[in-house]
Image (cartoon, protein in one colour):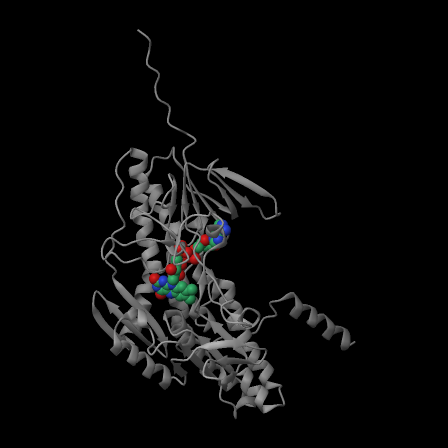
Length: 441
Ligand SMILES: Cc1cc2nc3c(=O)[nH]c(=O)nc-3n(C[C@H](O)[C@H](O)[C@H](O)COP(=O)(O)OP(=O)(O)OC[C@H]3O[C@@H](n4cnc5c(N)ncnc54)[C@H](O)[C@@H]3O)c2cc1C
């Protein structure tokens, strides 16, 4: 009788995850636990780190350091192969992901299952003129530049002879009164108030934030009118000029023009509205829904055999309430946990399950030690909600060392003022320093 050959494990089986954000990292961590080690796990991510976005407004407000909100992917996983690489194209026929190396050359990697978790791209093009002047907040560099330029505007105002220009430099316009807009406006207003005393030249000026919200209430995502009203009241008490039912029509070199016909002269415009389909997703030619990749209930991309969508880039129905998942980290993490189980089912030839998640609630830190929250239907606001916000996000922040760093920074904020160092970040700024040296010779 012929001896039966032992079936060798398929060593070429490889799950490739595009994107190392909340979704990609959680998926890799779960797969490490669920899958046999013969199945390779690879993350191809444009950045070598995860950005803990809920704390980005704190970086802008200089209450924590930029390095506290980023964690290298290699330090969050143990057997995942993590490559810092921007995926430029997916060859679905050959099952290959093409990516750009640092030196600009293109390489490719074969996959058996491909998970797209590349997030969404910020879109500043919707308002004419905004792309050249607007600030978005998505990456840690965005947060560094925003805080730095804000301090830079204070420095410029301190040497500016024209009172109108001074006031313009000290006016920040934030577009969008959703979660990000409210949080950024709150932290910028706190920073402006805390640093004012270091600029005696500006004692007659009124640095302030104007928040534009298209709808008639702030934080509409909360679906709680009383919390929206509380937020409005607190922001106004904090000196923020909230303009409801007001939107920006266009932007020029000095002002934001409103749909009402008014114009607000400003030295900084922060835009928190508008995302667009990620270019990689656009290039796939697959069905999109609301600018996101349409998936089946189990997160497999509709009409494909081995492509999966996850996080902000995907339009994933939630079986819990039949509604599409919102673009939040809370959902991205839960989807990743479910997808890990589904991929395990695929490797075992079992049936996958639809994404089903009961949302826990939402929290927004609105500045001046205030927050609003809805947790399992319970509404909270004010200092208690703010304390809870800090506790929950400190708990969720990956790695013990980051938690400790952030906790120490928060403790230092109590007796000490924020750091008002302005760095010369761009090449242009550093070359100006060169000219200065030449002139003083
Ligand atoms: C300021 C701010 C505050 C927020 N606060 C909260 C909050 O309090 N609670 C909450 O639940 N949500 C919050 N969110 C939303 C949350 O950040 C997103 O929903 C979450 O990041 C989505 O995770 P993701 O993994 O899908 O995408 P991302 O976290 O955006 O990760 C995408 C990853 O893909 C990588 N990538 C992009 N393009 C490519 C490419 N071509 N090739 C390879 N890799 C690529 C990127 O480098 C990145 O690592 C906030 C967002 C912002 C901007």
